Length: 201
Ligand SMILES: CC(C)(COP(=O)(O)OP(=O)(O)OC[C@H]1O[C@@H](n2cnc3c(N)ncnc32)[C@H](O)[C@@H]1OP(=O)(O)O)[C@@H](O)C(=O)NCCC(=O)NCCS
Image (cartoon, rainbow, N blue to C red; front, side):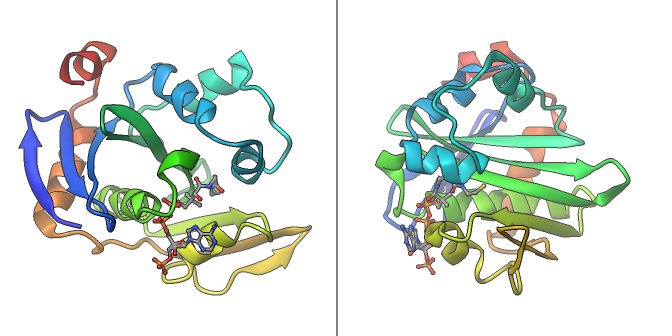
């Protein structure tokens, strides 16, 4: 993954393992459009793995919740590849312990296995570690081989609890070059607006 360019301050360009250019931006607070675009790009199986339940449609409540970012407690980064929304990675800090955060990543099926999940994990780690988060926690369906593989280098041992794999580990702070990390931090420090996102994509 290499930083190739910074466009204004609203997007950071990173390169995936497959050589794709992914433009990463902060989800604008309340902007449900990218949330819905990613959901539409997920197969039933991917939706099941993401939400740990059969989720044939995204309810208005769920979409609002997923777009309810403030980039302090709830941070979400959107990746766009070839002009299409390709994935979202997010973390939400625990109310009782803001040094810990739960993470979730979704990559549309058409872009899976090209390195975008790992790129989003690295981007979340870069932002979280520079925002006071020390530990990521993980909740994964036991048959979600992709997620298990994605988390293997960072999550420590995942253990089975109530039918799900759970685990935690230090936030992966240094998976990206420092220049890229600070650009990503800049994305969330300037509170984005719908207008900014729309204007830059
Ligand atoms: C899990 C997910 C985010 C991974 O994204 P991705 O872009 O496909 O992942 P990457 O291409 O970066 O690959 C990451 C690792 O997973 C491995 N992997 C990817 N898909 C795999 C699969 N179906 N089976 C086994 N391993 C897989 C890759 O080989 C890679 O391992 P490596 O880096 O050790 O070589 C994606 O599959 C997804 O969105 N799934 C649906 C939603 C979901 O399950 N989210 C996670 C729970 S919140």
